[in-house]
Length: 316
Image (cartoon, rainbow, N blue to C red):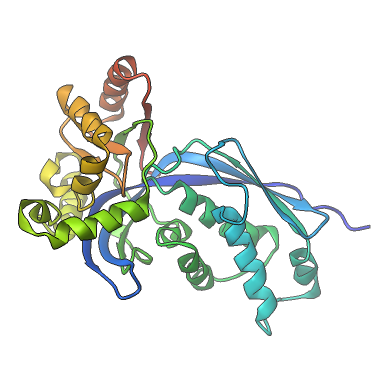
């Protein structure tokens, strides 16, 4: 009698973008980017269990997360099964083939705010790919997993790479891990207002606003190259000047969602300086000089703004 596989528990980390420059719109309607990813300690938990049927079932602690085929964990599992079954030599043995015929229950215990620009869904998808590679003993190389990740979403390859810091190019899926920053320790405050931002909407509005030119268009272009930020981080860490942090999408999101600007003003109001929105928002982060500074300032924010989700985290 076949024994069931034991459940597999995985950490699924969030990310912030310390730098995000939108370069141009591509023919496929995506945008070319230059971005500096930073993986942070804020994390969801993914639990993978075997089912005796052939179904993929999603459970999640958050009602905001879809439980159907649109869920990125579902998409990751379905894509992996599909690709391996279609490839002529894709299955190492009958043992793996039998496992792939079985279903899965994927439970997501959410802690990363949904739709906040912190990459929670992409991270969950990456954890599912990496987890199933172990769960089913597939021994797929990272190059193969990275290709599958790129099919799922622009941020997914960063999480599959396992890098703490990485440069992202293309639409964000081309990843260059930054080993020069591997010893760097940063502390952050994350503040998320109680809104959900649509990333496709932000990019559509970005194209509209930039096409009109003028002062707004200039706000979406950086004063400093991402290489300067990386160089400063590798030398001075906490003493990086605030203007080295950059996000092309921030002027767009703050125009459409004033709550993001309110968060930024509140952070500046208590003396914090290195303040930036992550991704398409609405999460705003602060680079702090120490864990103590981050915890002290976050306590003040929690008292004043009880409706916001506020976290203290380091890079992970």
